[in-house]
Image 1: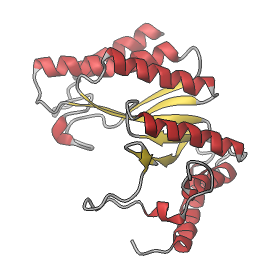
Image 2 (image 1 turned 90 degrees about the vertical axis):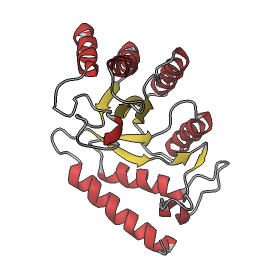
Image 3 (image 1 turned 60 degrees about the vertical axis):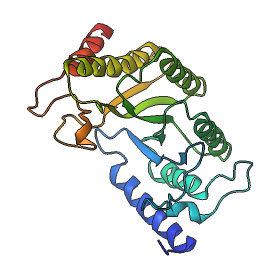
Image 4 (image 1 turned 180 degrees about the vertical axis):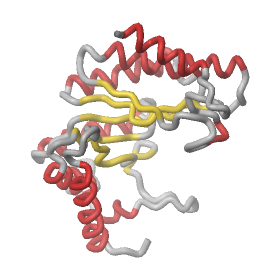
Length: 240
């Protein structure tokens, strides 16, 4: 990507303004992921040489604060604050809670944005996890992150949920998938008394969506509900 920082700023402003104007006030649209995956492996997310994955927005420059926060993050929230007053503004991320350096940067960036007078309403987690992820340690770290969000007047959303069956589809792996999915939902339900939580699946069925070969959906190839579906349904019914 050979575009200059000036060109990128112009394009970012044009795109974000149009995006916000299109969806602000639209029935059923309640929140917006303003930025996503800003960090990677405990550092700011930049280009990944040799992978074809470029992050051109990082080249727009960095601020003079202690973290040298990329300027595109502040710009995105400035535009969203101006043109999306009717939506909740979410700071979204992919990595799980074990990437403590990444989440530290995100927490400090939210404080940095708020100090600049910008509204940030919540944090989002893209919960793409492997089967069996829901250990006691991982669930405790998830609970701690939700607690931090609520203590700082932030909503907490699972913005993308999938549990990958990388070891194949068997009765045992399907049962563990149901346990993994439902354990995450259970933590959200336990925390709903202290603040707002949200949960979104990433794809409904195995034949469509991302990483189809890992069977992360709630329905199988024949569109039959998997054990995961019924486990989540039971939790939600009990919660009511």
